[in-house]
Length: 580
Image (cartoon, rainbow, N blue to C red; front, side):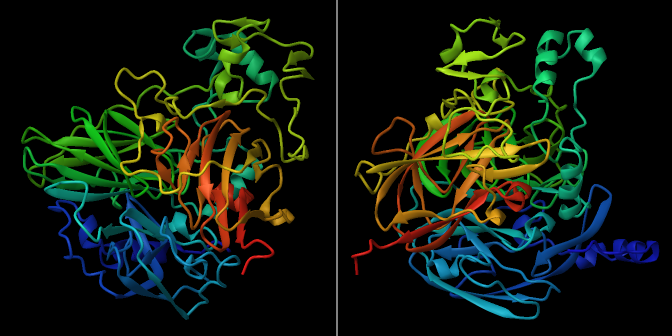
């Protein structure tokens, strides 16, 4: 899409009109007392949503954006398990649009992915999504057209259970995390294709290396020889992004109210385009009670990482009548956003300093030190220079050789394959490896209810997450969707163990439409059920899938630029040839 041409007079006029142009929905306003069940205006069996152009402003910057019903974030859609809902969406943009109901179990024709499940919504047209509501919990919705999601086209969904809620609370707040840049997402992508580290302003310096502030010089030479950068953790960073809570930056100080001693439920949604966040409430423990809308056995923690498109429900019980800071810090620590929980509007929690930027290590390259400790050339957890081939698992390979997996085409879009990827579900996620407090891992999650399908998988499927980061090429198994990647086929109701192997040095939140899967964490029968899983660099994650939803479904990385650049496939679920 061509970038808009805006002259100085138009920009100034638009900026003056901003308070009128972009309304803030009631649920997202600062100083809100919390959600009231049934009290939202965007609820009931018939709901109308209008997609349109707006202007958005934060931190002194403003530009064109895309909102729903005139707001960013979009209205809260509040539903009830068991109802049938009709959502009529009017597109007033000059381009096609769509809405995908992220995490909702719907007929595939209602899933909202242009080119896969429906044709999209043309300019000036309407489309009515109609489906039974078969679940409860915290979810969200967003565009699946172009890169509109990065421009503000997203909003929260809360579905109340048909019966008693397993989570007891006196008050609840929806917390939508997001990133926003006045630079059009197509320009972000163009710049990254020109220079993979365009927005990485935290590269190591010679002075830092010589002073010993970064990795030892010898290790940095090794990384340079591999043409890799241990600071290359996020493609798009705080160098251009403003980080938001409910559409508010730090200076705007979104505030949610509480009374001391109350159990407050925080429904936290990561609606970012490209940012995984590390979230904490200094001085206030958090109890995880749900993940991706599914209840889990309560587990207390001090910090957690929320991948793009994941949701977590937390219970906090502030004991004192003071301001507590809700801190969402980008995993590369290039920026953060602070919101406030307080007993009174106008109170402001402190803004902590950004913590020291993390550095990637050998495990992030798929070199599991536990399995390689006997190898020559190891010293204090780092690999010594390798001047010739090294023997790894019977394969002669150099550091950037493309080893082993015959299912992965070793073309220009695959720079590396992880030689020894490890199951990292019990690992602390990127940027939290060395903090001195409790950190949530996937291994801590246990489903509150028994898993619905007790059958053992009848087959196994490995899927590699592949890239050439220098050329900004992203794919599954080395093939981009636009290059004619074949669908991934499943038979209806078959049980499959899927293993995602991350051959890149960035975490990837992988989302499967239309299904929940059980993340394999060593708790048979009570594995956590999810629709999105964040695969750590150089690691692997397995999940068990019951292919119970007939149709064609999107399967992709939820980092928007990665998906747009090719890390996406179509999953098909069909009856057996002889089945009715």
